Image 1 (cartoon, rainbow, N blue to C red):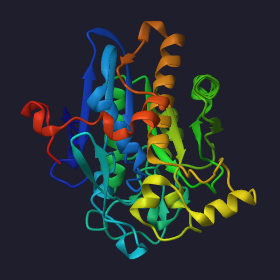
Image 2 (cartoon, rainbow, N blue to C red):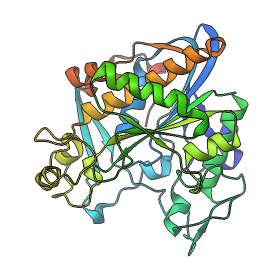
Image 3 (cartoon, rainbow, N blue to C red):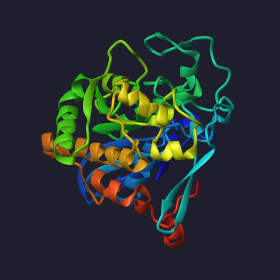
Image 4 (cartoon, rainbow, N blue to C red):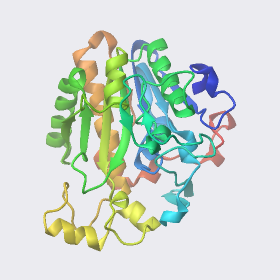
Length: 343
C-alpha cells in the first residue's frame, strides 16, 4: 500500500492524498488500475473496489486499486439536498458503515471556485463546479488547483508503473442515456465492445458501449488515452438515487433503487434502462461492476498474452446478486492487525 503523494508530492499532508493498494501476482505480467470514488456520491464504485481489495487473488501481473480517488469528496456530504450522511451494508458479522460523499471535493480543501473553470491544457470552458470534479480535471498539472494535482499524480502513476488498463467506476441516472455501459475512446473500443457483448450474452444483464467524446475535455476516458499509453475505460451502472424526479433521498432509495416516480416514468418509456418494482438494488449494481471490470481485464489479457493479468476469487454478477455485497467483506475484528486499514 502506498499514498498517491508518492507520485505527486504536492498532495502530501492534504485531504486529497489517498491510499493506493498494489496487489502483486507471483508471475510477472501486465498491470490494471481500478479507480473508485471519483464521484463519491456514486457509492457502488467504492463498494466494488473494496470487494476487489478484500478478495482478489492476483495470479499474474499486478492489480492496483484506489478506492477513494477523490478522498476529499468522500468526506463531504450535501445534507442540504436531503442526502443521508451515512449508509450501512449488512454483513455476516454486523453492519459495515460508510460515509456518503459528494460529486466534487470539499470547498474546505479547494477554494475559491473560479467563475469559469478553464481546463488545462485545452482551455475548454467548463462549469465552475468542475474545478472540484476529478472527472473534469484530467490530465492535471502539478502546480494547478488541488484536484488537478490529484489527476496529475494519477497520470504519473500510470506512466511510472507502466499501467496497461485503467478502469474508472461510476454510477449514472436512469434518465441519463450514458448509463449501464462502458465508455471508451477509440483505442479502447475493441476490448470494451467484446467485454460488453460477453457479459450481456453470458451473464444476463444489459450492457452497451458509448464512445468517449473527442470534444469534451477533462474526462478520464478521454485524457488518459490521449496523454498516456494506458487504455482507459469508464463503467456506468444505473443509480436511481441520482435521478431528479424521485421521492425523498433516503438510505432505502440509496440501497434498493426503488422509487414510485421512476416506476411511473419507466411505464411511459422515459428511462434508459429496464426498471420495474424490483428497482436497481446495490447488489445488482456492484455485481455488474465486478463482472464488467473482470471481463475487461480478461479480454485485454487474451489480446495481449505477454502482458496478461490474471485475477481470481472476485465474485461476478450472479454471485453478488445471490449472496449480497456484504458477504464479501471480512470482519476486521478477526483479521490480522496488519491487514486492517483504519479509515
